[in-house]
Image 1 (cartoon, rainbow, N blue to C red):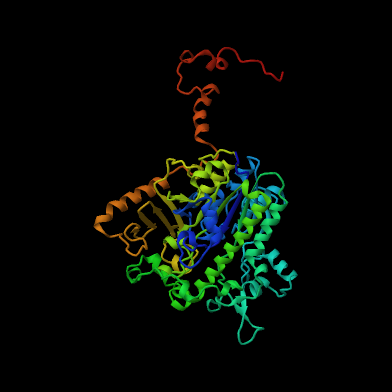
Image 2: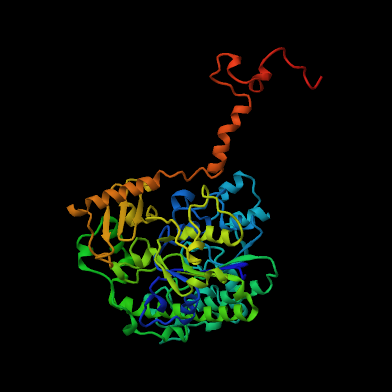
Length: 553
């Protein structure tokens, strides 16, 4: 029977779940991703554990909730000792490699405390979120008065661009993410300025970020040999800067932009945290029609480029026979509001932000019955790590991995499953929003969502409640509706149960705890015994009679 030997774990950055034709987009056709869905399972209710890059990815990579691993936002280090996907897979004999982005911030302080050499194999894996690195590229080399956002960002890609003739101090920005001014072709039209979104990036398509990273993934697989591997192919696009190379910059026009999902009552009745985001620079920008009409066609072009590269990648897998022994997983780390709900970017819990595409193709014959189906089970990003571990032949340890394997759904089974999903958000680093919180530790939001209801708790403030059945666009906040107080009570009970779960005892399983109950009875501890006759002789033999001779004499 054909069985998956390898795993190709593809993640796009900021790809909305509904910007695929297999998910119903009327104008953006993604035939290659659609074809993958036709041979696999598309999970239509998949959610991230935090709608921001760093925290979401750390949950994907650890298989643990943000509340557990503690890396609550971008640039918050993942503490030393958190086991990752790579740690779990390597224990089964499967290599785990990276091509692209992780947004990992290493715990250098913890590494120094433990004396971990950053140049050692262990040190490099701890620094790189458990991956062996073929190429890491977080796709970010912005530059301002205080210097570069990421000193190491896109270093290798910048070197590649220079080798191809794109010569400047920062080719990532100046060529890959900028066009040229119409009046003066020597002047940059930066992709940071939203008015330039429809311009063609200077870089040739083949040299732009998405084709480049596809090439690097193919290079890795060409030399991988016979050892089983998991390759995390992690693209930066369609993440901002929103600018695409020709011909993708001009494939879509304002008439292809789907109507915005927003309502005046959202502004009139806004939760304080939601209002602060709407009133921020990004929210105000994406609430303008001219911004949406400039940015969304460019975003669609970037998605189309991603799909074309999937066609190239899948063709290579088929030509080389890898298609037959490789599980392919395609997803995103979060979505993008694109003006919906008077918002831009991500950060909050509306469906465009917190819900993600997830498609899995298992090459094994056991998955034949589910090919081309849609699974509506409530799925979380943390479910991928235990899924991959099962593929590699390992057994998930639930005291460490908090997700659940998706293999039963892929093989046509209906397992016992969760009743709700959880997502979290830390807004403590946002200067405009954080002033609403008493202190950085209380700047927290929690989402509980089931098949019908979506509930949001904000520390120190009122909650939110939406009926996703009668109000799928989440316009009407039912937080003070008398008829819905019982639902709010239920959601608070669920949040309390989830919050009380035992998530930090990762060094002992339940089975080990049960075994420990018997251990001490035969190791000499006899508390509560008044007389030696109360226990059998073997339990007290060393406490009777004369002292034994010193074995060292």
